Length: 263
Image (cartoon, rainbow, N blue to C red; front, side, top):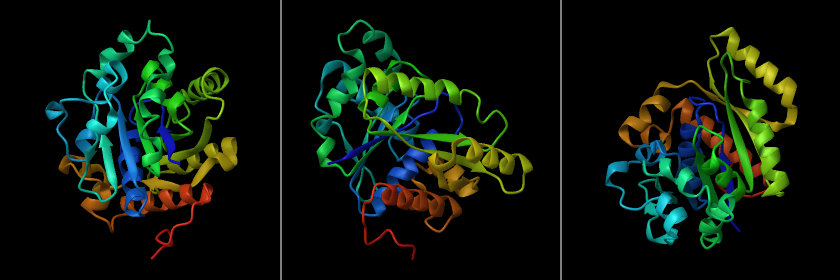
């Protein structure tokens, strides 16, 4: 039974796409068959694993709007066990097109239902908004990870997102859990980073992942090569952080894996 995890925050630039790509890659190299779904019209997850969005003929948009079988458009990436359901700029128009459709919040869930059990994990990279596509992603998901950058204004808008999650739980998906809050872009040289970590941990306590994603040059440059951090530089801090995050998620879900022990 596959677990669907949405990575969501309506605030842009908090590390959603970086987390989505590299968490999916980390779960994949830990020998869990993983599908990365790009549900962001910017299609950065698509380009971040080596595909040019302009060359994509069919995407998640066609699955939602036209009912295309997702199996027909899923692409295999160069990272072992990692697959991609790509996005396209057309996804911008999907919110307008589905607004009058019946069960408009359930469309992604219905689209993923036939393939859910074919993967151990499905990671959805949500768009930086609280629109219908993000609501669709949360309705389809079993849990949500909320990335929060260790910078000023970090908690800005977090209340709105938590409120949206409550609405989705009450109306569309009562089984939606918060997998955890993930602190990203941590810079140990700055006082503000440490203050944000303390503040978030004081507010949210056990909801916060122990793993913190550090600011890392190799992590920032990997997407420009169309590679996950695992393929770009497996020994970098960014790779180690995301592998630790993957192990923490496996532990939280009581999933044993011979490869999850630190080497």
